[in-house]
Length: 145
Image (cartoon, rainbow, N blue to C red):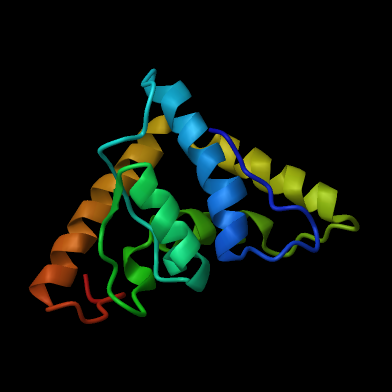
């Protein structure tokens, strides 16, 4: 799985997300799917300010990428929040790193060790969580599954 590392000291703004991150994500997507375009793709990301900024909205519209709506304050719907970050935190617990580069390598090692099947299962879980969100009229449900 490809990683996109934000350089130390860089703040992820809407411009950075639109200019650096999304093009890299879409390039990796095209390589993985052997598609020549990302047109007619649906993207799911949360409501963080960089994700909803005008520059990102404009970029995604230009690329013909639809964004799935994400209810406010719903970390229970973001696969990184319910699957990936808890796994990384568990693996890193009680470990210390003297350099950020060593920490980055440890995180890359953890994410690389996650099988394709586990990632696929996380997206099946995501679908179930979307249904829970619908069933609860968009209200928070973490821990209520």
